[in-house]
Image (tube, rainbow, N blue to C red):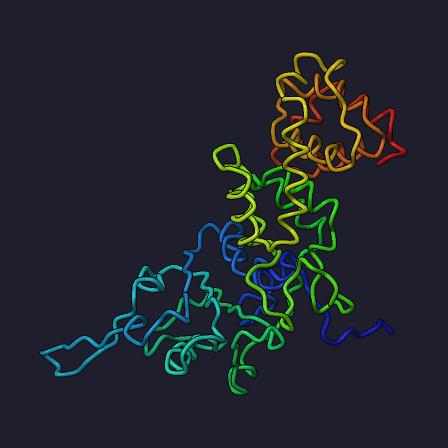
Amino acid sequence: MAEINFGKKVTLKQAANIILNTPTNRYFLRGEPGIGKSSLLKTLGASLPEHEVAYIDVPNMDLGDIAMPVIDRETKTTAYYPNSRFKIHLGKPVIMMFDEFTKGADPVKNMLHPMLEISNPRLGDIAIHPESIIFMTGNLASDGVGDNLKAHSKNRVISLHVSKPDSDEWIEWAMNNDIAPEVIAWVKQFPQAMASYTDGDQDGNPYIYNPKKMQDAFVSPRSLERVSNIVKARSKLDTDSLIAAMSGCVGEAASRDMQAYIEFSDQLPTWDSIIANPNNASVPESAGACAIVVFGAIAKVDKKTIDKFMEYIERFDAEWQACFAINIAKNPQKQQVAFSAKKFSDWVEKNEDLL
């Protein structure tokens, strides 16, 4: 008999797959702050392009933001007209996310409640398209950020504990979303920054969210995306401003450590010098600098430069060559670039044991 794991976490990819394959169910995705729960709306929308997409920011809604009574003077009655944000007036199936539902005002949640039904979901007396997908997000009760879901709501939704992505999962996402290579390299070398306080034995971790501590900033997928914007603009900032902005985004411990990677980056050979002279461009010695070169190259390499870069990367230790090959092969935007290049194919054939 298979082992039954109660309370098991799911990844965002797994959550999306569950929702897509059981669309009439209503799911409550709960997880710690900043792990990307809200991004699932975009993922589902890409999978079902014929659906409308509606983002519903529940904590910032009042009853008047949901529907308004309109008077029919001939019949001397009123009817509810829904707010256009729900997209239900278009007559098409809708993917609807009730973001931070558990922080909404009770009257608002009560008004939205009939949409959680499997049979005949409705907003007031307005029927929802039967092929619509509706799910909600919120934080864990242990996060201590004011989430509340009553028993009659819990009985209508399926709760999924969404895990924080680990470093490898986040790096795969980051390489497809224009994140600064210095930030990716830092996460590669400090995978504990993607740990979760729910994992246990993390009280000494200076990077992550911890509800037991007073924190102004911490590392999360959301804050890493924001700090990437700061790192990209570093040439326009003085050192003190850069560290202050980074500290306000990911916390002081992470920003100080990340600053070292920025200094590595500024001392590395330029991309142009690598491509112009791959056999003589300087090769970094530290792991951090090597990581910056590898992840930066994945973002920059194209059909014209892949052969030259392969000449350069072959001067690195085998582990960094493999890191480049594995990660570019995972990148849907760069796979064709890599596998259409003879020097890359030759490297793969010669180094199969590293992959």
